[in-house]
Amino acid sequence: MRLQEILQFIDDAVYAKTRKRLNDLQRGIIEGTLKRQKYDDIAENCGCSAGHAKDVGYELLQMLSDIFDEEVDKKNLKSVVERQGDLNIYLGARSFNTNNSNHIIGCVNMGSEQTTPNLNQSQPETPDSQEENKNQTKIETIDKLRQFGLSDEQIAEALDIPLEQVKQVDLQE
Image 1: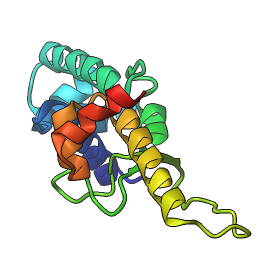
Image 2: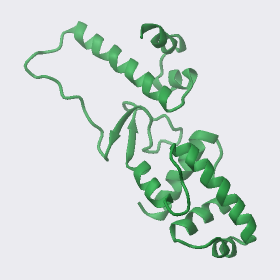
Image 3: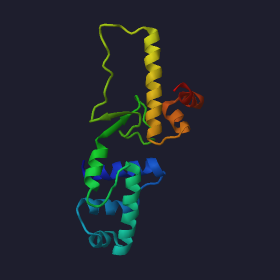
Image 4: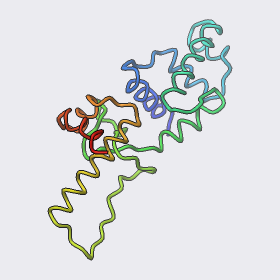
C-alpha cells in the first residue's frame, strides 16, 4: 500500500465507525508515524506544538485500536494497517460503504480475490437445496455483520432486506 492508499484506508475505517473523517493533523500524525518520525518533527510539519501532536496522536491511536480491535501504537501502526488492509470483506455485489470503495462488509476473504463457493459438481442443486443454501448464507452473513458491530437496522440496509427478516435470525438459532 502506498501512503495515500493507507491514509484513505484508515480514513474509511474511521468514517465507518465514527461517521467523521480524519483531519489534517491526524493525517499528518499517521504519515509521520509511518515514516518513524518523532512527535516534535510531526508537530513542526503540521504547524502545532509537540504536546498537542502527542495528545492528538494518543487519541488517534486509541481510536484505531478500537476500530481495528487490536492494540495500535506508533511502533506497530504499519503492521496493523497491513494486516487490516489485507482483509477484504464482501457482501455480494453491494458495498456497505457509501463511497463505493473496495472495503465492503459481508463474508470475510483473506486476500485480494473474492472467493466463490466450491460446489459439489456431481450432484446438481435442487430448488429446495438452493433455497436452504441461501437461507444458511443469509444467517451466516447476518451473524458475521453482527460480529462487526453493525446494528440490525444497518444489516437490513446493507443486505437490502426487511428489518423483521434480520430480527428473525435470532429466533431461528
